Image 1 (cartoon, helix red, strand yellow):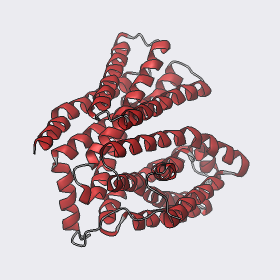
Image 2 (cartoon, one colour):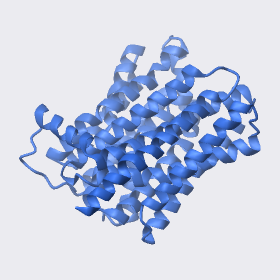
Image 3 (cartoon, one colour):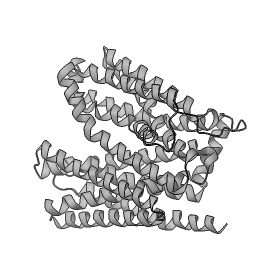
Image 4 (cartoon, helix red, strand yellow):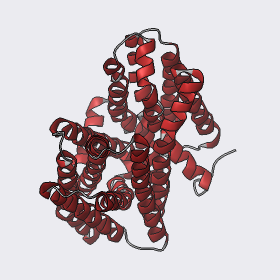
Length: 403
């Protein structure tokens, strides 16, 4: 039984594919301490599980993208799911930390096909308004998983131990593999001349990164993601360590900002179905995110961080991201459909690099007294997204429209 690309089931499948890394990361978070204790290593060493998962997740798409352009989206997803399944079983049976970390790299590599291939599939099958609507719904799905995965991981940890979490992750990969094999029809139009050799791969990536239209939207998306990760990394430091919120209270705040992303993505989907050009919600999203971040930075500098004002501003910034991301992603994928896999891989890799840089800078520059590192990075990244759009992406779009 084949899944129709226009159906809600197809949208859910793509959202499930994009959310695979969130399962791998967020379900494991509550088990770090227990994992370290079980393997007789300090918790700080167990934290390497996250870093090495992200290493595999960040590098693998650079190979998956070109491979999917040459051999198709379906074989790449099937291969990646198989890696994820095998790695989940390996993690569940690991008897030492080095073995566990090795399997986590492979698990991350299996999850690495998610965003790259999902958005390439969307580019294969949809254009313009329809593509933006699909991406908006997928964005909503990917926000839901991080809000429920840690709770599910904690419950499974209490019931069956940390190994059961990785066994369940293998089961999640198996379910996705089964659905892709039975329900997904290949979406890519394959060009035999597009050989998978280093010179061709490098040339395709160079085409993406030197195309002003693509590069502009890649930078808009990456900078907006950097602002979001600055908040994700810094909010707990500020709200728990400085303000003194309890973890449960912080969880409510985080859920509220996650709802802001969902609201922005849903609003974007509604505007798209009504034929509103993408430049309008994208501009509004950039203005909201930049304004909220600038006000938060100003409040930090004057030492006046009242939660009744800070929290709505954080939600407003997240709402802006929900408006930005679907339009920026669709813009980055639009101009080069014949190498959509490479475009998706470049977009995802630069996005993750920006998120990693922003989050690490927030942690490194944290002064223990204020939210300055968080709000400063949010402001810098939001303004970079704004400038990337108006100085690079939008002029390139106008020039392309005149051709």
